[in-house]
Amino acid sequence: MTTQTRILNVGIVGLGTAGSAVAIAIASMDTVRLVGAADTNAQALHAFNQRHGGKTYTSVEAICADPEVDTLWIATPNVYHLPHTVMAADHGKHVVVEKPMAITLEEAQQMIDAADRNGVHLVCGGSKSASVTVQKMRE
View (cartoon, rainbow, N blue to C red):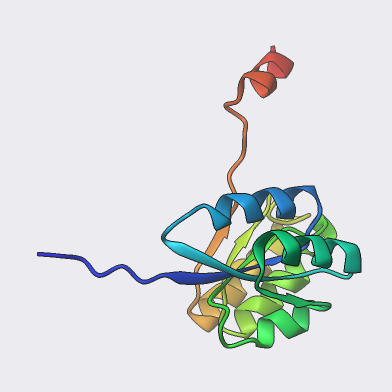
C-alpha cells in the first residue's frame, strides 16, 4: 500500500531573524513548497525574492487571501502572533507560529479557538531548549 503525499504550499509572515532562517529550512524540504512571504520591509522582501523566488506581499492580509497558500508560518513579533494567527485561520490557512505562541494564556486560547472554528491545524514552532547553549545557561 502506498501513501500519497501532498505538497503543502507554505508562506512566511515576517522576515526577521526567525522568518529568514525558517525560509532557508523550508526551501530545502521536499514535502513543502515555499511559495511566498509577507513583510512590511521592502528590503527583506527583495532579499527573500532574490534567494527563494516566489511571491512577496506587503501585508498579512494579502498573503492570507492568496488561495495558493495552504499554510502560514507566523514569525512576526510576539505581540502580533494572536491577530496574525486568527487572520490566517479565518482565511482557512493552517498555521505554524513561532514561540512563544502568545503573550497570555487567554491569547493562546483565542488562537486555538480560531483554529478549531475554521478546521485548520495550529502548531507552535519548536524550541531549542535541548540545545547545548540553553542547557549551559540553565546550569
